[in-house]
Length: 400
Image (tube, rainbow, N blue to C red; front, top):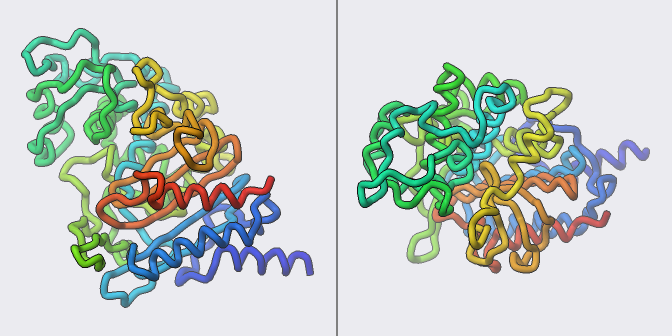
């Protein structure tokens, strides 16, 4: 009887969904993992109502505590014609959530003694030896691998970069552009650093970025629906991207159709994934680089990844509230009061331009992934916006 009741509670928490896929990790009733089910329902009701009133086309949320799935639900539709319900295993553009995956790849090479974070990038990408500032002078500081991952490389960017057919051509184009700042002196939320980090992975490993990530991360972690290109049989699960018109109605937004987001392999914004796949990656980080007995990263590498690598800046934060630093591929919570929402010091995560979001909280042994496909980004921003509400609704459910 107790076993049957436990299974019913899990079913109620995770909800019915038009997918027969098994949970990505073992399931458990929320109250067995220190979460009040009736409080967790507040999060589900908020997402359900947001979709029902047309804020979003659809949403998938997945929450794990102590490595067990306590909530995994989908709401809404996959397409704007509202013909297909959104399945729990829908595939999304995860955009800047790609950066944490690329950072993990770089750290793997560090663990093998093939690079150090403070190595000059030009040692692996010689095209970038001749970088110059806007006044034509060489930078005083050497551009390092760490700065690529911490988004302090100083690149300025140009639309011509997006036309590069491959990473070799991308770095050649980048080398011809002036730096916007001295390396290491300013945080800039852009894609360039992580794209170049992808080229560093290729140069050291001898593999294309997609092949390296598949071999070293996706395959070992069982991330079967994650990649830069979707196979034809996967494209029927790709969630449509929407935006809101002047009348507040959902309308289509330009989006990739399962092909590459950019012509080159983009280690910053290029991946597609399901909530379950990314949850497995995030749980690996929470568990110190190991998932279900498979070691992907060392425990100390994950600790380094989640430190604030902006500590030398004044202020040592990236956000307007002075509450979050930045690690290697994601933000790090430094000040809960300034942040103005529930959470934990050291909480690690990031968001994507299509409104995807994830968090890894080692203190609370908590992982959460939220998948939306909406432009402009609605997950992070002002304290009264969905990011704060989702975070508050998640953390208020913790009872022990």
